Amino acid sequence: MLSIKLAWRNIWRNKSRTLITVTSIAVAVLLSAVMRSMQEGQYKDMIDTTVGSFSGYAQVHANGYWDDKTLENSFVATDSLLNILKESKGVTAVVPRIESFALGAGKQQSRPLMVIGIDVKSEQHLMNPQIRLQSGSYFQQNDEKAAIVGRDVLERLNIQLGDSLVLLGQGFRGMSATGLYPVKGTITLPNPELNRSLVMLPLHKAQQFLAADNRLTSAALIIDDPEHVDRIVQHIINKLSTERYEVMAWQELMPELVQGIEVDRVSGYIILAVLYMVVGFGILGTLLMMITERTYEFGIMLSIGTPRHRLATILAVEILTIAILGSAVGILLSLPISWYFNINPIQLTGDMATTMENYGLQPMLQFSTEPSIFVWQAIIILIITLLFSLIPVLRASRLNPIKAMRG
Figure 1: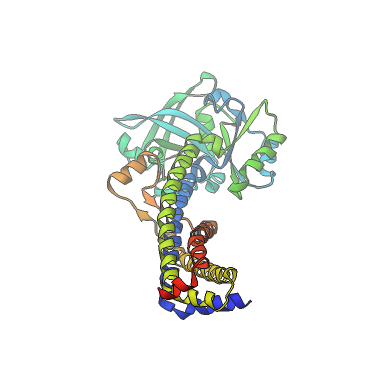
Figure 2 (figure 1 turned 60 degrees about the vertical axis):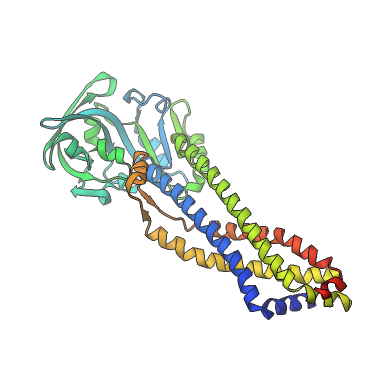
């Protein structure tokens, strides 16, 4: 207890010295936390853009569909199957879809397009096209004869809202697929490629167009907690016939995205390691300065009989207290910065924006406010501070009292 009291008094005896040390630690926590917040925010945005707003965190297909995405590998949407999916713990909604490709034509232009048949109500849990409408209006029912297209499709086909879109393709079991659909609206999505090629039809009309009544190519699952996706997928696999169906988590659906995030995360760790080294030596220099300024004081303490282990304990408590204060200040400073850029993402322009759009990402930097990011960075900086403090603490505890008092 005496060591703690002495340490606390020593900390505030020289406020400017304490302030310098606390500031150096706080800045280290601030830099590392904000950097990690930016990285993790980007990863979350990538996942939400490509997974959370289009494919879903898990999907159910007919066995073999993922290797050969054709209508021949579609499945019948039976009530028993849909009930199993809806009643699975952790699944909040099931979004049925039928997908294919067709040639879209206007009056003078034609382009290959991606045709997706959506359930008008269920789709609002995933892509939420009603909110993403750029112009026009949303579907009223699943058998409405109308189409909603990506925002750039009209320009590519040289047509306008209200014009008829001709679709030509191949349906289920080689049937001819032809249809004429009035363009009811345009939609803006985070993925630029979808904006250029997407055509949405109400589910029943899409099934009629593709001669695939009551058939689906996928059933996307909306999950209440993406962290539990593996457990939910395994639970559904145990309930379904693996000979007829395949259930895949988003990591299997998009392995390139997972690999890209992991590679980028490793590069981020390397940059952080360099930052930690710079910060560590900076903190070491600050602590050595603190010890050097107090050499005469330590010499007197040792000369009047203060045990060396008690001197080391007092210094250790001082450094630990300052490190905790610095880490807490660093967290308090980094939280509002990350929160602000989470609400107001940094909008990118120029070549960087073009590059991100080419990868199907939104041209912006959105920070994460996940509490664990800030806590872990504070803990890491705290550990680094304590490790680098061993040198000055040992140096002070081994001082020769006579030489220390002579200066």
